[in-house]
Structures are given as structure tokens and as C-alpha cells.
Image (cartoon, rainbow, N blue to C red):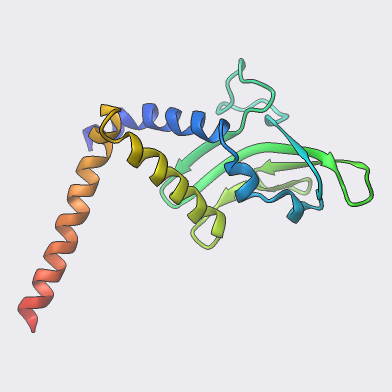
Length: 156
């Protein structure tokens, strides 16, 4: 528990930086699904929020992972199907804001899990904080699965 709490902010910051330097947003929230057929610009959330640093660049994407949810806050700017300018905001659901939360029922959630797994697996040995954060979890899950299989084998 101690490793998880103390390392989580640093691991989260690494993930935020990677999300902002990748094309994950375009895959998880496909612009065509929001009537933006062509090129779009990604911009940081229009309203002030504690998860968005004041010094964040204009194309900053706020990303926060929770137990069974990934939260994004940003907006697309591009031309719609009628070639007119269109802004589509993602964040807390409102009449003018699309849902920026991804849950296990969304394919985007699983894309985020795959993205996070690839990114962290490549850095688990060269960035010690990632290993210290995830090794206890991996060890606990492997132990749990082994005990379940062993227990099931004893019942047979």
C-alpha cells in the first residue's frame, strides 16, 4: 500500500506526458465519430480546473486514471461535414460537453489499458519507480491466481 500511494503521482505524471506526446486521443475519441471528418486540432480544456497546470501548452490533454475509469479533458477544433468550424469539448458531461470518461464498457478504455501496459512494460526495469509501484501488484495477482488454481486442483 505504501509503494502504491507514494509512487502513484510520479507514475501518473509519466503517463500524462506520454498521452500528450502520442496520438492516443485520436484513437480513443475518433474525430469522425463527432462529425469532424478532416484534420482536427487538440486544445486544452477551456475552463480552469485543478488537473490542468497553468503553464500547460495549448494542446494539453488532461488525463487521470482511476480504479475503473480513465478521465480526459480537452477539446477538438476542426471543420464539420458542412466545412464549418466546430468545437467538440470532452470532459464532465453537460449539454455542450461530450463524456470524457471511459469505463470498461468502452473500447477506448481497453485501448488506454493497452497503451498504458505497453508504455510501462518497456520502462519497468529502466525506471525504478515503475517497478516499485507495479511489482507488488503483479506479485499479489500471480499469487492469487496460483492459489485459486491450486485450490481448484485440491477440490478435484
